[in-house]
Amino acid sequence: MKLVRSTLSDVPIIMSFIHDAQVYLASLKIDQWQDGYPNKEKIELDISNSDSYVVMDDNETIIGTTVFSTKKERAYKAIQGNWITNDNVEYGVIHRLAVGDKYRNLGLARFVFKECHERLKESNIGSLRIDTHEGNKGMQYLLKDLGYIYCGIIILESGDERLAFEKIL
Image (tube, rainbow, N blue to C red):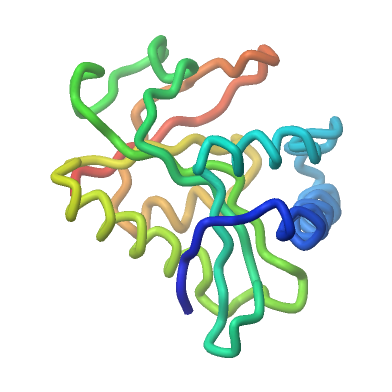
């Protein structure tokens, strides 16, 4: 597998993965991504900001997508709790990780985290932060398994609460 920057031509497949994730989350009775977010315009903005990535398998087939950035996350400035690192320190962020239905359980999420960790280390950035819905037990399990520490609750622009995690690399 490899992680490469998305292009506008990838938007249809990215949106299909987002749709698959919305259906999957709804089947688990998790209200995350059930309000039309993320939409096509948000994905296109991620691409124009050079923050959107796709995961390709060994046959160059796109099997997943994520947003990975080292830009400060506005919602992370105020946390009900404490980040491990000071907010003045550079950190990486992962958002909108989604996999196509037929590519579940291939280790794609672990691969994305490993790749992002390596890229941050190469840039001398020492931590990665992520947030997830309180009902998304699968992601919470993965984060804890990968050594992420629960830091508290952040509030999104929408007003929704998310559980915040950080890992020192």
